[in-house]
Image 1 (cartoon, rainbow, N blue to C red):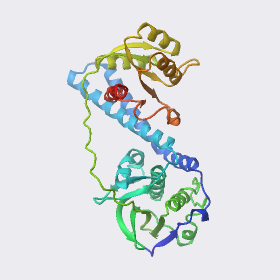
Image 2: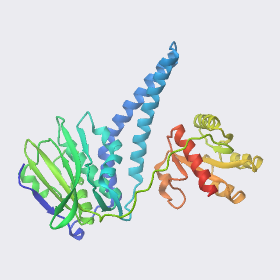
Image 3: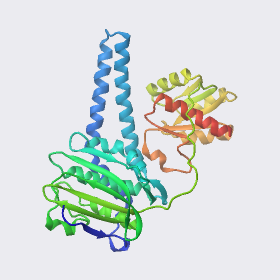
Image 4: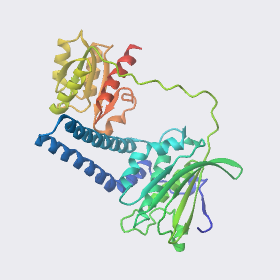
Length: 384
């Protein structure tokens, strides 16, 4: 490859800022076709296997095998949509210390749609600690942009290698993130303008991808550079200042307990199919279920079972004027010790972080074990 082309981005004021939300929308737009393709494949697996079951004539072990295929495909679809929604709702945040290797592993579901059709992703988190202090969602955004650029540079397919390692540079400790592709390389005449906003040679590109990486590097007082050889490929390097080592003992993981539940739960869900399945799952888990389809029905049901109901499990979006949050506020006024668990398929549900959090919110779609664990969690939090 050619000599490194360095772009020193220590001064954020020297570059035009791109709003964080616009940066995310740029990445989501570029991912959308691959994500839709992946979801359609998974839905096809589910639909075809369901059609087989409807036809009948299978032995018990064959039914179990088909059901397992449906479960695996639905879980993959759930993981993908959940990761996309989580990425979409993430906002610029206060700096935190985190491990880049762990960030890589968390990005797998967003990167998988690129595999097989356009590129193979070779992820190498490394064995040595790669801790940085920064905005986690912004750095994830930068890495996604670099991987997308790498994948798009290989019209005939190839391998994208994503790795990280601790390195020294300019007498300082850095974490080096490498994104290496086997694409066409960058022509000499384009290299000086590569990080300019809106500069692109692609028919459908916006030219914001590398500009976003440049801004994020600048905001973290980092450096981005690259090496490229036409016909061979390109290596982008994102240098981020390493976080100081943190003394102390790592916390011991708490084992997940899936013991039977007990008590009465008020289930509020307007979709009859989801309500019926949730009722069955909760009943199988050991709970007595009182159900309602909307806010007024839930208020009436609660009044009939006030001394029994321990948990409210409600969708946030309900028909009529009363939302799930409104319902919870009304019931907590009547019974302050009531445990509340919310659910929704909308990413906007997380907009009010003072009201919803990872302890009292269960995103749709959810697995039976996740429902049981979420109910147990809100009950334990209310009891503590």
